[in-house]
Image (cartoon, rainbow over all chains, first blue to last red; front, side, top):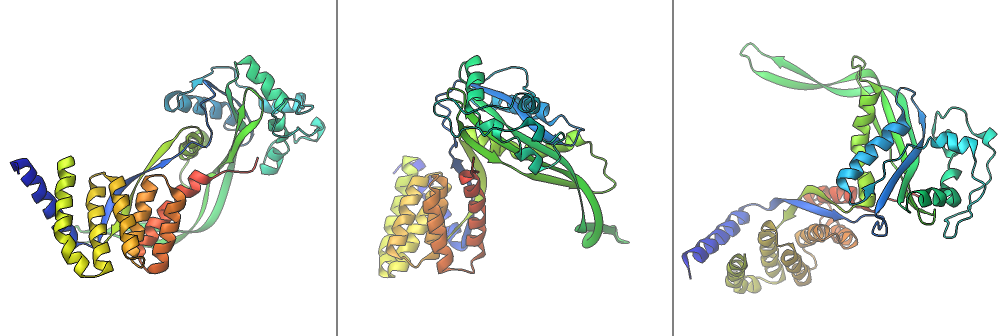
Length: 263
Length: 118
C-alpha cells in the first residue's frame, strides 16, 4: 500500500468515525430540472410583444421584451431576433384575428368584436378578453414566416399597484448600559403598499403558429409607508424573481440547495 | 478517486461481518453510512445504489428512504423521490429533517411540473 493510499484510507476511516458521531449530515445538492419545451427545432427566438395593463408608470410591454431578450441572449443557445416590439394590444384591437387557419394550430381563434375589448386594461379579467390573440395560429405563422420560423415568445403582463394593511413582524434593537446590543421582535400594524406583477408567457411555434406552452406567474412586493420605491425598480425586483421560472421553460437548469442525510 | 472508493469499500468490507451479525437494520445502516460517505464525495450513483440496497435490507428504515429520496432528486428522478419521501415520512412522521427535505423537494418539483392550461 502506498503512502497516498494509506492516507486516503485513514481519511475515509476518520470521516466514517466523525460521521458516526452525528445522526444528520447536511449536504449540498444540485437538482436538475429539464426544460419544458424542446427548443432543438429552433435556432432563433423572437420575443414579439405583450399585451400589457395596469400601472401607467411602467411600459410593461417594452420593459418585458427588453428584459427577456437580454436574458435569452446570455442564458440560452437561441439567437435572439432584434425586431421592433409589437404593440400587441393595438394589433388585437385594430385587427382582430379572423380564424385559426394554419395546419397544426392548437385551437381555432374565436371571432371577437374589437368594440367589446376593454379600453384600459386594469385587471386580469380585462386581460383575459385578449386571450384569443394567442390562439390565432394564422397570425403567428405569418409572423414566423417573416423571421425564418423562430420560437415566438409573447403573452400578457399585468403590473398593478397594491396596498395591504395588517400586522407585520418588526425588530427593535436596543443597546444597554454596557454597550451590548439585543434585538427584540414585535408586531406592528402597518399600511403597506407595493406592486403585483402577473405575467403570462405564451410560447408559440413560429413554423405552425401553434401554442407550445403557456405559464402564468405571480409575484408581489410590499413596502413600508415611509419607503418611496419607484415603480420601475419594483418591476425589475419582481422580474428578477420570475426570470428563473421563465428560463426554466426553455433551458435545463440546476437548482442549488442543501438536504439533510440521515443515519 | 478510484483509490478513495477502494479504500471506502475496504472499510465497508471490514465492517460487514459486524453489520450482518446485527440483523437487517445493522446491515442497512452500514449501507446508509457508506452511501453518505460516497455522496459527500460526489459519487451519487454509488450512493443511490447503496441506499437502494439499504431499503431492500430493511424496508422499515426511514433514514434509508430519506437518503434515497435525496439521491433520486439529484438524478432528476422526481417521481421516485416523492415516493421515497412519502415512505420516509410514513415511517417517521415526526422527523423534522425529513419534513424539511420534503418541503424543499416539493418546491422544486412544483416548479419542474408547473404548467398552466392553454
